[in-house]
Length: 548
Image 1 (cartoon, helix red, strand yellow):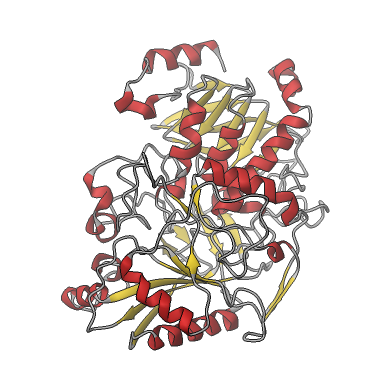
Image 2 (spheres, one colour; image 1 turned 60 degrees about the horizontal axis):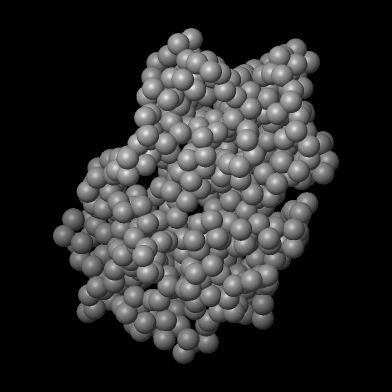
């Protein structure tokens, strides 16, 4: 990093006190709007922050660029009306669907990315998810790496994010090289009758792996405002708190906030990225580095590469295969409210109970159906936008008497489901038609019966649409063949010598569980290759000018 930038950083951020932890490592451009460094990481979500954490002791000057700012810590963090009713923290721009109809995506631009709002459930993908799987409506392709190759990094990611869990209770779980870092949470007493009913019906419910700082000395109080809310006490294992903040304390990792990168500029031969250009508070910013790592999210990373098209890369940066933006996956997902009008649900931390009995094909289901887990407690402000015609008192009665579930089935990669950038309209465009719905409908039928048998006569469902994209993946798939993939098996772009992508863009398939832990594990895996392949030595010795 340039001396000017470091000096400016030091002036702006004298040793912060305990109440100002987030000021560590924050940097600003020099007077000309420039920053020079060794590695630029664009995006501070699960992939970007975990990758930065892995580089924290290398001696490299790393700058993590985040388009948003720190999410404010305020009492409204725990208010359903503020978070859902008023949309207090929604800050995403509008995207377009294939008919050019605008919608507001379910993404958040803050330090820590979407993990500031996620439900902190961090399951591993199943071992079979890395192989080819036949589904009701097509084939889920094999990954070019195996579960065995990912397993050590899953273990490291679980430690980093303080995952609580218990081995041997999930009927579909993959093998493990060791126990969970922390013991599993216990079900809220209000969920125990439902768990017992499920067991009587022959199912094997279990406690989902959770990334929370719970236990002796921990800050988590198992509140009802975890899933979908920011954590006021910072006890959720989000990317900022668990990975980025510790990395920023080393003195060589830095964070640039409120900076939107709009273009990546290459050398004359098109093989090397030399600059990332963007804006910060209305002012032009240029970051020059030897290596660039994209972690903007599967949609935004693809969009940035499209916006960076040039003479050497006319169809988008790194898109000689034509696969950039394609294979977009986002899961088939349904919210379910099972209601017993006679029984008030007094649950607090509801998001523990899960079912994977139908995750894979079996004697009871010819094809894989997916995962079932509890949602955080649904409140009236969450469903009023979906059912505006329903009086609020009725919505409140329903949610006071419901248990709430999230059903997820795998969707399949297709060439037609894709992300592009509409230059004329200046907007991201998402082409998405759900597939493999036969399996998802089967999952809804099965769990509806389970809930009615458990004493909930009213079962309400709402399938999520194009705007529910927190599980987005697949827009820059990795593979061994540059003709059919955008990234190699270590997530370096085939067409560029100094660019990597470490968000969920690389996924060849989506599986049927939350992708966050797999993103983190892969970021650790790629960072190890990044360091071990001799890149570190070259970065520390090679002048920046040689890359221009």
